[in-house]
Image (cartoon, rainbow, N blue to C red):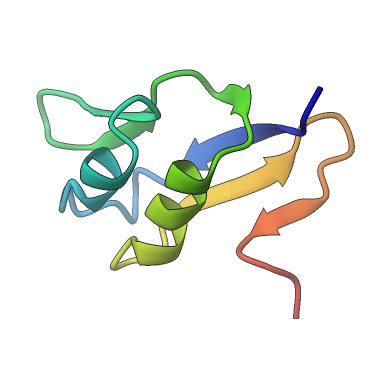
Length: 77
């Protein structure tokens, strides 16, 4: 069994570019205000979700390891 992630979107930062939806269509949704949110806050680790976080133009997506809370993205300095 692989890693599980907890995914959050800071809606006060999200600009609704939909890059996350394009990179991980099963991982993110846009609401009627064009704000992103994870389809499920706890999900299996996946390259698409990580790519979505890495390519978010305003860095609104935070990924941590489920259970430990260890940062996945953004990485610790």
